[in-house]
Length: 393
Image 1 (tube, rainbow, N blue to C red):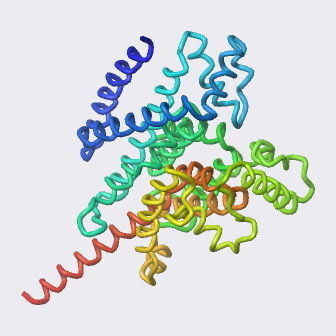
Image 2: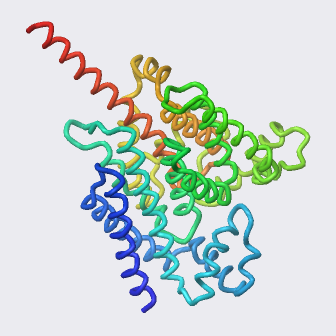
Image 3: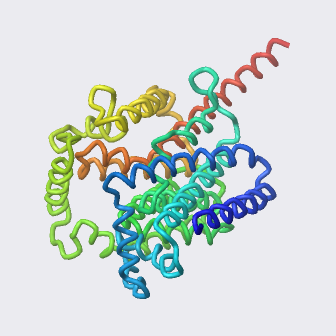
């Protein structure tokens, strides 16, 4: 019964949410967002059914919160336990495992709404790929992205945090609340990802084109540096490096140990530690492919990875190098976050099943760069045609 009540409440909340966003953004498409919500809920049902009959971290998070009772505040720390901290107050008031799964699935959906806002606001020109498929619609409905953001766990929360934060970066002076809320969830779930995001923001602001004033850029850079200095021990603590005297060497040792453990944890292990860096990137971004799909889930994921591969192939030309040098700060920030996160994760991931889950939080940054480049290409072709017509007349 509590699941049904929550389901109805979330439907109402969605409509209010849509109305607010429609007034704020003229491009907002309620019909598309409703379709996306029901699509997301379909994956919630699929994942929930899967979790009932298979091992799932969601059960562990719920059990921790349930056993803690009123002591759930003890889980307020960065990392895995923070999920149980978020679940704690809801368990305390009587939420069942199913209800919490639904609530976290909704949080993942909020991430998709902000991803939509991020793309539409920064790339207003519609882009078609594969002849007639709308680029934004395609990436919003990619199955793997939804499958890993519909459960009680880190995936839904950090995806929401990343999209809320990145959307707010466009106008930081007007969206301070979005920066704080998004940044809070990113840092609490994965402090090292917050490091990559802030480095991306700083480099993007300093090297990219944009409408932010110089004082605002300086303020953001100073705030980012200050935060990183204050949170350095928490960030290093992710890899047990807070007391390290040689961070680089100790990280390599941690990565090797972590990679070996993940490789042996399931039958989908790959020898990532032995690969050269370009092959590590290829494995993280585009595998499993059909030749190495780990089970039915991996086979379906191979179709999606093929789409990734075809999309990324569109930037493999000299024009992209020219574009990226003059790109706006939002593009450069997204590219840096994408590359830094991918670089770090390739050193500790050696299991294709885990790779499928982990990359869902960073792929949208790569898609943003691709989408902006394709829109820029389309705009330049349109301008060239106009000049040609004007010259002919």
